[in-house]
Image (cartoon, one colour):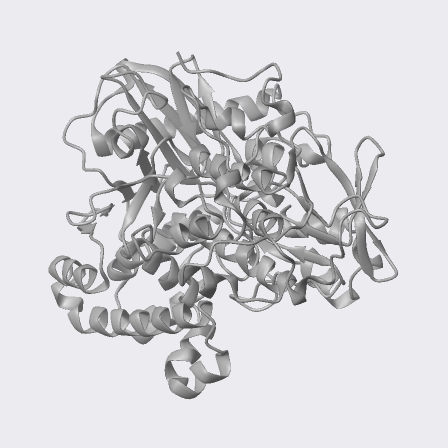
Length: 571
């Protein structure tokens, strides 16, 4: 549990020798907090900078009416059992016992997939999932068997690779399986001869990564499914409780979080990172910079693009496309919703999900064709921050056509678009809200007359708060070949990237893995394998005690701003 520097840590240098910090992290999403926390636990002096009022990125929450707390992006977590990936990452920082994971209905089904002709309740376990699929689609049994066998092979290889087995060994052991890691989900579905209906059922949870089968790597899809099929959970107290635990570790081990602190530039001189410049003009120097900001903004804006990177990479990044953006409606009711399982609902109004999506992308948007439901008041039942007793709190999410024109604006809010009172934007936002509520009532029955709070977030909302290109929470779609994504290393000495666009995948599990991979490269040690074996960095005895009334939202503002004005409360 010591905090001595490793042999691989020499690039950072000791604090206080002409440098303000050993490492600066730009952005405080889960990837940034994990990488920063592990560096701090190793003894590095780490500074995390966040432009928003609270840390967490897509994992943050917001409060309304002193009664309700809505999770922006933490809808469920997978692989949180005793041997799970997220608990291992927490354990390595000594904070495993600070987060409680509440299981969803892993036996009956943690996801309910609904199409006009088929309903499938997805249980934990690949073989249980296989049987549910075959019960729902008996004529497709052979194709389902082939698909699940491929998925189990690829996910086993991916797990072994994460835990340190060299890729060359994996290819030698099973070259046919490893080739599927370079193909798309669409190619796998084609290979297995599955119908449009079966394709829709198997890819119905595409809202977990924001792409259609021809746009997502097969390995990424099945690894995300594997993450949840190892058991689906929700963090007690919501996503901010997970964020706050990482903040506590960062600060306990000597790191610092500054919120309301926006970075204007990452400073690169003579081919290496030197620090950052804030919007105030202040410069903070460090030999290591980790960007948890949007990858395209990191390369093209924060780092100045062509001056820092090879022209080929700059062009590839400029031409990159983003994954699907999301419209989210947050709903609170003064009544409970009877008869619902402790599961997400993935509803599709067609057995041809891909056809419906293609029509939407062309701008043929006359109705809601896909809708995801997340019920926080079921997942965290009885939690006083979610809603008062007898009330409901849930979120509705759907995709929308790409681009700003659909929303009646010309450019990004990051570039100065004043959209919030734009009549065209407000009209479109209201139209989308009503269409989403209409679709939701088709699925779970009428509830409009019991609404106590409703509000809608659009891609522009997301872009304003987390600076994500195109307003997507999922990162890049195409960066070169399908499935190709940047590594955490950039080619610029001392500059690393983490977050939704790196190669470790989407969601909390993916970005946490990317965060620990980044720290591993810097420290020169296989941290993920180590923490699975029980290694704990830092000294957990330094962690703060939690007093009565402990508030994860307050903790997530950073120690220096915990008591600043403007913090929303419950009660």
